[in-house]
Image (cartoon, rainbow, N blue to C red; front, side, top):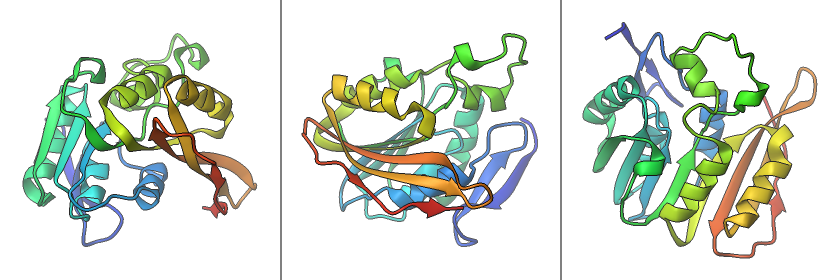
Length: 218
């Protein structure tokens, strides 16, 4: 295994192991951790859990169970290390494509997915662990939302961070899969006032009046 380093996620009280050659948690991961809401005794599933950073965030709530799904074996090994050392609630890491996962329906699904479609990508780009975390090679936006709807209970909640330039596509796919968008928060970079990220909460099988929250600046 490549060199493992110990960082912290959200605060020094929340340590995490990361592998140096793999995709690390970033500002969007932290933003999503602060945006999501978890209730007592809920089961939470993280699609594309990577090193399990969002599971660590959810472990601060009185959850019933945590489940992390990750297609890359190497990332699962790091996630399992973090589960073994730092997570206090029952937690399972599943090494499989979400397309193949069969679990009991869950209360909450969270995801910090790949942002960029293959058609947006230079065909000559060298694929490594970091690029696989950024590009829709193993999971497209359409697949993410379809399988979220498949695995959520009725009225279950979906929390996601994504790119603003794909908002029309996100709304269309959520609507097609009977997911009503309840909250949107736009994150701006204070240096150029450009929208950089979208935080989204959607509810399965519910027609929601969407609330646009006050903007965040980073």
